[in-house]
Image 1 (cartoon, rainbow, N blue to C red):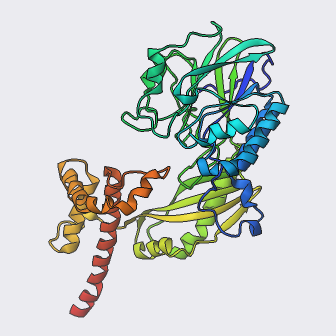
Image 2 (image 1 turned 90 degrees about the horizontal axis):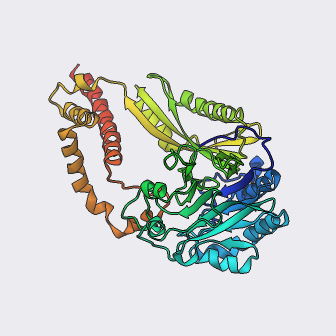
Image 3 (image 1 turned 90 degrees about the vertical axis):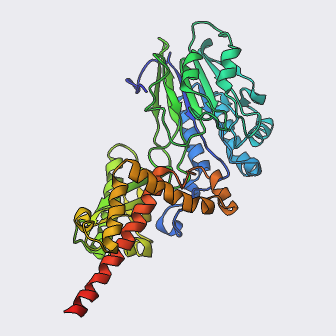
Length: 458
């Protein structure tokens, strides 16, 4: 990514506002109850509110077009709820002489074409899975060509970019930059959501690629396609759940007179999620840690505000880390929920704690403990195996996987596969984390049983 070097650059440059997955018709999950009593309207944290903020930015920046990278709407049933805000957005943009282009994603494969038929000025590219281009003018002259492809059905298992390579589209106006607008899975071979590769994007010869589907933005960190311009995901417009952490918002894309493409994200999402580690001292008590959590929450809010980022609400998942002698007490504090309702006002931002997680270790020497022959020693040896890559660790994980795979495959869990942040619960990292956490908890209980035995013998 290249940052805008001069905010006051020539008006001869063409500017776009690119918007990733909006998912109108959804509401962010895990918000605390009573937000209104705390001075925050929950409706101000929705994708609808984020879309209206993006439109404000487009008008303020006087962009030459707005691009949607698919999944504008959550699903077919949500189209009725999405109609009003989407129509309002398009009308305001058209009133400012800003054309609105988009492609269809896997979520809104039925909804978005229906809405486009009802909303005058919402122009879709590449319907029915056929590549299509649109030239954007600047001061009456062709300045940029946008190539787009839309999902023809919810599941597409072939690469749309491979189709473009087999049937290349000649430039409408040779010499002007070309940008690809596409929704799908990058480097996910065998997937069902239009999988394509970075190599294919490079071979297509376009000057930049703006992608939708993955909710984590990657445009800023993308290496680009060869020596060409930016290439990456725009990300979701606002974090829809606590797993969608970090900076969110639309992207300003500038095409200079020399044909260089520059990008900058506008971090104006009304809601932000973050995961933070809070390190505890060996002898720190649960009550002391509880007081410190809110201090850490406010500190982080102040930190991002110094960078000009001030969301209306900031939700935090705090993970307790470090070796502690108060292992059971701190774990009970995390699980018991005494931290619930913890909020702090940091300037314009309401900070709240969504969850406190346990990432603690027992403050003891596992290697020393493992030299014995009692149950704690046997368990300590297993935990040491988990810490070292190699065949013993692989065998331990495989044994656990064979015990759990029937449970993990039960039909009742299948709905979880459709979640945005779904992951394999039996993958190596997840399984190792589960075994370490459960093993450490059992080890703590076993060691606690030693004390009364010693007292009885004395």
